[in-house]
Image 1 (cartoon, one colour):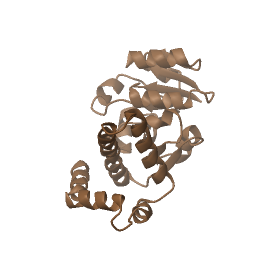
Image 2: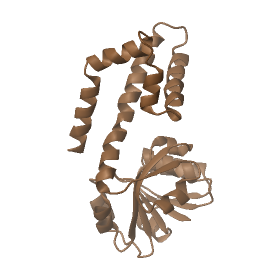
Image 3: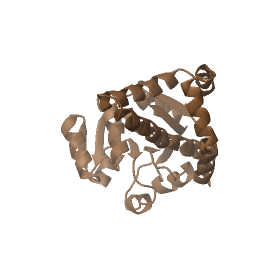
Image 4: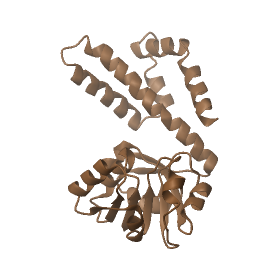
Length: 241
């Protein structure tokens, strides 16, 4: 495909790295110049151009802009009716996206994560799921959403990633003061959490770790008593509002 990318921050850069070896012709915008230059230097299939040139050279457009900046950046640009647009912008729903990119087609809204650069990542998407799968599905798992309300809920729920990383990081810091190799301790905890949840549902894993008086049960119960569950749910409710 001829793919254009407007807005090349951390996430858009990861997206490009994840598909740069798939034979696409990819043109990235000059925004975030350091990231654009790095991508063009690393991959023969990636070139850098001004925003309008990105559109002129592409049939599928990725938008990796901040939502509040998108209207002013996109307003001067001329899209074609035969183009399909995939947005990575949280806070802009498909209807708003269509208004920003007309006469092009607002094909999909998806939320990629940094892991998409190497594959094996979860992708939530609303819209043309076949197009998203055609580009990303070979190495990632695409979770199809039914409507904007579901997209909003998923966007809020995915924010658990940062608190989970913080909790694992804090446990690694605690462990690091008590072992000879702190880096190995953190690597162990990261692998433990990732591998344990990869193929096992949360309820099943909790039950498997629910040995009466066991370390996992005691720490979980301590954190629940301290308000962890209530704090998490109230935080998610706040994001959704």
